[in-house]
Length: 189
Image 1 (spheres, one colour):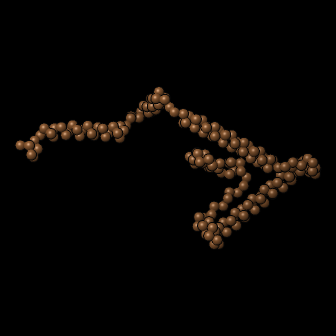
Image 2: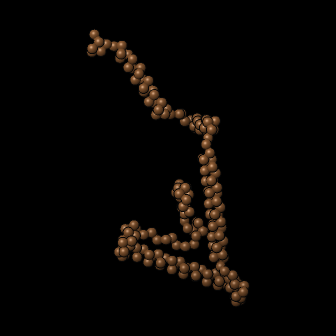
């Protein structure tokens, strides 16, 4: 629903409920700052909470970079040891598979996203074309009959509308009012 509302508002941003890892994005999530800390910083005040959260984020990013560097070193040493201990030539040295795979995943994720966006835009244009043309009475009747058949197939009974309820009440009131005229009132003796 959020993405649909963003599309209707002509905003390019989209929301994805999946984790960054599931989306193929290789980075730490941005830190979430409390609204009070953001408001204080906008006023020019110092926010210790925001500084603390940002520092913890910087530490997580640094640890992650160190782990990635260690993995690359481990992959390089594993390949050189699997080659029988022979030194690896610089010309034959390859990037670790994990970074190559991540680049391929990123490219594929971007392509999938662009295809998804194109399909959404095409569906939106088709919906606009369909919604913009005036409907004939036959088309309106056909759609109403189809909707009624779907409801009937599910076992749903049609509910009286508020307007028909008012008409029923008005008819009942008229029916009760007629006998009241026949009965003698206080001034009719």
